[in-house]
Image (cartoon, rainbow, N blue to C red; front, side, top):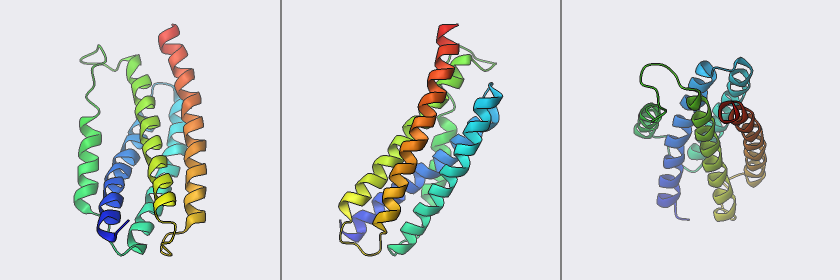
Length: 160
């Protein structure tokens, strides 16, 4: 992967990571189940740490994290809040479910990014492959926890 392509790829993931952190924080504040909200807040802290690791990788490859990308990421997360959930004024129980699905999608995209970097930068000494392997494992763990929360909330919302 040449540097220009690598930097563009990392910037896209930077925007996504920024949106992801905002989304995790929002869901951690707004989820109707306080235990789920608490667990999402813990995940939000991890996702923020992962974003910081991405920033370090961007810098190590000779680029700087894009402010425009970060702003775009936050804007995309904000627009993503407006979803059809059958309620106009108050929060729908489906919102809790849809938001957990969006969090799973965000972590899956992050994992795919770590996995591609691991595969495509095999000879790039600027990229710590062991760190990427740990980030992939961490994303797998996050996905597992989100899957558990999703099924728990889904049984309550759909099964009720």
